[in-house]
Length: 288
Image 1: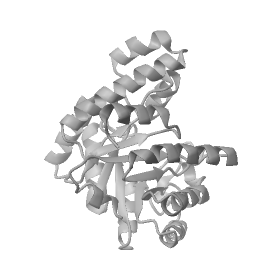
Image 2: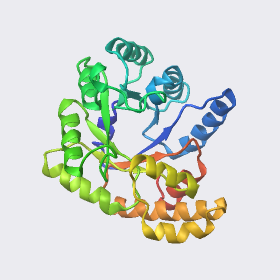
Image 3: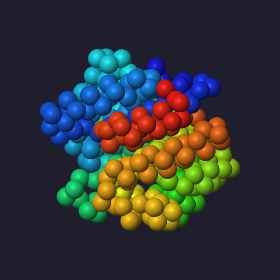
Image 4: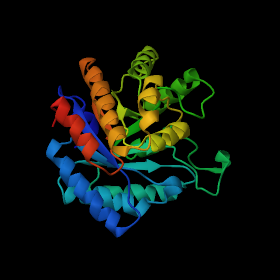
């Protein structure tokens, strides 16, 4: 089923994001997590794609298994950084053969040995070009990422929004946000997006805080802001993971309640391959 069709429904669409583990034991633990979260009847799950295509085979295999072995609709992430059209077409052929209907088209991170790559030499310089290429095949439903606080590499929010509009014009049919913790950033982004003619569903990406040190690092990497009150509450107990998780669940639950009241199309949970925090939030929201 195409993801866009899910967002046409009245109820909020619940989806979970996972990443490919590095070891066989990690894969076993991942499927335990997926099976626990399957009880919440997710509309779909997604699997990320490593920097420079480093998890290509694992990503394709995992989405195939989740869809066909577990019966959950699955979406593959696909990044175009440093990839040739021939390589991208090979991946698209693999996903089509695996029966995957949905792709999240991303620019992606360059390989770790390329700090400042020359994008002019690439077949795809940005995600909008990848989205257009995928759409030209006429088979897949294509999603894209968006950034409520602006992409970290964009000169301004206005320029970032122009890039987002181009991505939608070129083929992205729905948008999933980068993590954010202040709903005002989401509401402001949606208002600005609608004002420039973006009509695609804009789905909030939710990352429950279970490790404050980790989330500070994530936020620095992607340009997300941690609210001052979260700092005040979490910094004094930063080394107590149990207290941090309880606070993180409480914050995310309240965040989701406010978003639900505003009529968001759904939630995309960044699970980090764990189930407890996400399941407790959904229990409190009585979703699933």
